[in-house]
Structure formats: C-alpha cells, structure tokens
Image 1: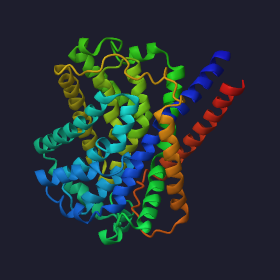
Image 2: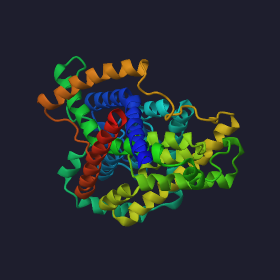
Image 3: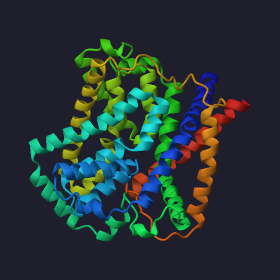
Image 4: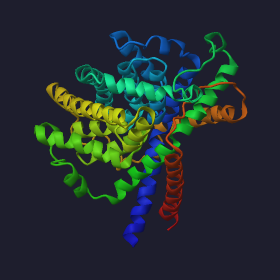
Length: 412
C-alpha cells in the first residue's frame, strides 16, 4: 500500500511537471494560431482548393499549417472545405498539415524530445501528404468520394459554418493589427483554442504521469521488441513492429496530438526506436473517435478508407524518416531529454517564460469572457455528445486524482 501511495504521489507530481514544462509553449502556440485565425480571412480558401492539382494541394497544406492543431477541429474544417467544393486530396492535405505541421506542435516536441523529432515531424508531415496523394491517385476511390459528397449534401449548411476551423469571416479592413477590437477577438479566439484542447491535454498529461510512475520498463520492452537496442542496430522487421505498435498504443489512449507528446517522450525515454516514436506521434488521426466522426460525416466506407490511407502513409513515412536520418547519421542516440529525471520547477528560462505567458493569457482570457467581439471562428469540432461528456468527466477525474496525489506528495 505504501508503494502504491508513493507511486500515486510521484505520478501526480510528474504530470504537473510535464505541464509546467510545456505551459509557455502551449500559450505561445495558441496565441499565434489565434492571431492568424483573426487577421487572415478564409474567403480564398474554398475558391483555391477546388481541384486536386499541385496548386490546390499546396494551398491546402499551407492553410493547414497556419491553422490550429486540434485534431477534432481539423476534422470539422476538412469536412466543411470538402463540402463547399475543395478537392478530396487538397482536403486531406489540409487535414494532415493542420495536425502535423502547426507551429505549436513543433514547439512542444522540441521541449520534450529534441530537435531531431521536430525535424522529423515537419518532414514527416510533408511525406504524409505526398504519400497520401500518391495512394489516392493509384487507388482512385472516385465512387467513395462521390458518395461522401452526397452524404454531405444532406447536412445543414449552417452547422458546417459553425464549425469553421479556419479564419474569421470579417473583411480584412476591419481586422487591423492596431485595432483594439481585433485584439479582443484574438482573446476570444484564444479562449476557444483552450476550450478545444483542455480535456485532451488534461487526460494526456495525466496518463503520461501515471505511465511514468506505475508502468515498469519491462512492459515497454515486451510491447516494443528490442526497445533497449540502439536505433542503428535495429533490423527492418523490428522497426516495422515498432511502427505498427505505435499507432495501436495511440489508438488505446485516443488523446489528441498535443496531449500525445509527453507520452511519446516516455516511449523514447524507454528506448523505443525513432521510427516507433514518430509513428506514435503521427497516429492522432487513426484513433477510434476520429474513425467514428469521419463515419458520421462521410459514411463508414469512406471513413475506413481514410483510416487505411492515413495508417499506411504513417507507416511508410516513419520508416522513411528512420532510414533517412540514419543515412545522414542524425538518428538521436540515448535519452536526449529524460522528462522523468529533470527537475521541471527549477528557476530557468521556462520559469520566466511561464510567468510572462500566464500574464498574457490572463489578459486574453479576460477579453474572452468579458468583451463582445462579434463573430469569431467557431472551430470546436463535434465529437458527439456522448464522447464529449465522457472526456469531460475523465478530465474532472484527472483533476481529483492530481489534487489527492499532490496532497500525498507534500502532506503525507
């Protein structure tokens, strides 16, 4: 019993430490995302993505890059763009870019995993789009695409407009950087960004803390074959097992892309291969809630096709990244950042950045709750009421777990 209490206390402390390490990065990322979504209009988005040519796919990638990182919001926006005439490949490019190429994700990865994983994330995001494009061209799912469009024709256009992931509907002239009204809208958008991800982040970081304290090293060595072996010594079939198990682990946790990063760091701390960790990071769009939402939008056949498309693409991408980095002798060796051993609360640049961004966040949240700003983009994606309720109560349960655990840490 004493061992369990000690592990509980350590899990809670580790979870809070993980979040403290990443707090300023979350705030910076969502501030940048909110500014882009307020100061950039989406009028041209749907007009320029109507064909599946190089230009449309490139624009879909760019629009995804400047959007927010919430996986569920990206699903809703992708549906909206496709519904309003964007090409299927361009829509998939937007979906992949908005969950893999966004700025805030790279910042979080740099904190927990190091620069190799940041480079892998951005190169991998491009590879995912290229491979998905090639697969769609080869497989030619024209009947599925037409059926998906027919399913969307029955949707209420007003519901689609409520879930725009992209930019504000206001004309650019009204959204000047010097306008206090526009900055109030940034505050409103900033609050909505946090409202999208607080449950995923809470659950993801709590699970990471629990895994770090309760799960023995032997579990990871059993789950990922030869996980204690150096990256350069792993054979092809071992790497293939790692990139197959990574998505399975993500499927079980079903946490969004931002909440997955501390878990990915734990995998790497337990010597899972570079390919396996990258596959885990890329797996935020092949989890069951995403499958279910896509089925609601497009039908089950198209949803399963998208699952196959993204799963195949991430396997190929993760292997290409591993061997590509190995060819240039860039594979990370050992634990670059041992997130369990570092003291997250020491006085360093993280401490001062967190204080600064907590002040900025306070001002933005004040504007979010008190200022009437008119229309801002409602990019909360529909996850379904049942799932949303489950996630909310799981998050509240996490808070109770953390409070009791911190009490045990400092009082017992």
